[in-house]
Length: 300
Ligand SMILES: Nc1nc2c(ncn2[C@@H]2O[C@H](COP(=O)(O)OP(=O)(O)O)[C@@H](O)[C@H]2O)c(=O)[nH]1
Ligand SMILES: [Mg+2]
Ligand SMILES: [Zn+2]
Image (cartoon, rainbow, N blue to C red; front, side, top):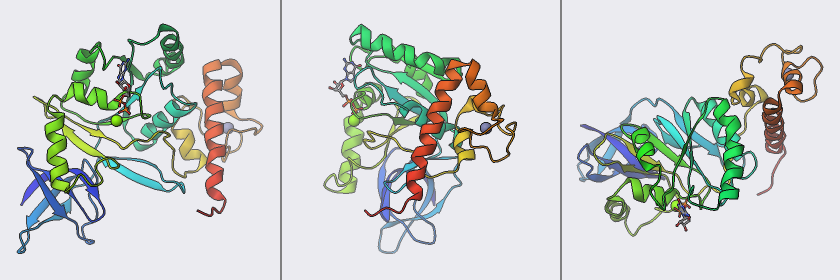
């Protein structure tokens, strides 16, 4: 029995990597459950010479997003950080950054913002830099780089070394380009994943784990989420996703205050004198309204 890391997972089977990065196909059992990409698993050889996952080690955390009905969909496990890749083109849609940061705060996973394509047109880049300033002030880290020129990658690489990171962000921001820069043998790893899944099935739609060279680290590439959505949650949980709200939570007049228009709301009061706070509170309120669509019956 050996402990391995799940590098891809779908339905009732997946792929695990041995310490020497050999990829093995494994079957799952209902009793054990479905490993997620990034899970540590034990496997056992069956009499029919198939590998079976016999145990999923306890997860330190689990990244999630909403499926189309607002249900929490688990994507990857045991993350040291979420690397949110942003670019001046395509510029992040409204609230996208806040959604990722809120998910990170709620799930207990650190976020690193990476501003890619800094070689591009100055005005779009300056606009995005300015948009990112408030997040820096809140304590979030922002690294700048270009997958095109390689600028800034010497700062990014050490952030990934020895860690298990999830690469997130809209399609087109340069995630694949960054992966190619950071993982010189990416095509070798991709090929061994495709040959183990058989005919490259599922390989474009599921999360996959790649190993960094010369370090214990790895990067999980998540499927093309062009619009990242938060799953159904209550207002208290959502408010917890906004780090600067926390010191005020519990100080509103009403204990069940949702910070919308209630009298005696400590957050609304703070927003009157603090523009950045007001901006984030408005974002929280939009996300809260968006949550209400999950409460309506839907016919898909
Ligand atoms: N100018 C510039 N273009 C980039 C950079 N990184 C990626 N691109 C381009 O942006 C497009 C999308 O990149 P890709 O890596 O496929 O993005 P992904 O969808 O996030 O995986 C491609 O045409 C890349 O060549 C960069 O740093 N600078
Ligand atoms: Mg890509
Ligand atoms: Zn309030």
